[in-house]
Length: 334
Image (cartoon, rainbow, N blue to C red; front, side):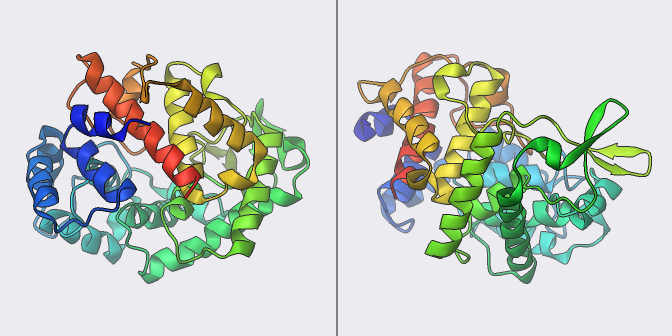
């Protein structure tokens, strides 16, 4: 991995996050403070900052492309300091947990939480985790729930054991818990839960998910209504980078980064192989393979990975994908 070249071709967000997350540079250094000023001026960051309302809430909804969940995710991905007043105030507003917590998701969020499938409360906890804010009571409670969700996978021998047919679709059998992408994001971005025993149990659960892959879409049934848990990037834990393209490649990068952050890669042979294939894909220390699907560049609650201002120049696409590869390789061996 050519970190010096990445720092040369990458924009302020990539440079800041590489220096901080990978090289361990303190945010208070003169160079990092200068990069923060450049990040604040990023048009995408400016757009999200403009969503701020008097009480700190971002946007007009909770779960949606232009709501507080997406806004905080974007600001954190861009590398904005957690001490920036708009981001700090947004996190405090999110903790209040009033009726707005269900905007954009409605009764589905409550039902998914009640079923242990990751609803509004799990989403909120994951949003705090993006900002490395895991000491709030609502986050600690959901960390325990996320651990239970992954541990439930260990008892499953096949998807047929936990599903049944309804109206031509698979639905969860009553009482089944199953991890969503928010379970994965929450645990990937927090550290207070980590013990060798828990990481070992999570590694076994992920290995089981590899064995069960590809996992079909499974719905939660409430009366006659079918609800979809957040299965984004959770369908195929066995996929290798070279087997993906377009939208599927964006999913691979997201899932691989989260699993690397989770700390389980060294204990799951299939994941070690996937990370090895990624390392082999680097040419002269950079990731030059094409991956130009809109889902890389369109930010929201799920999609979006591009930190550069656009990909019209091949060097900016290369910088973004190399940065993601760097994070995966760094956290997979941390």
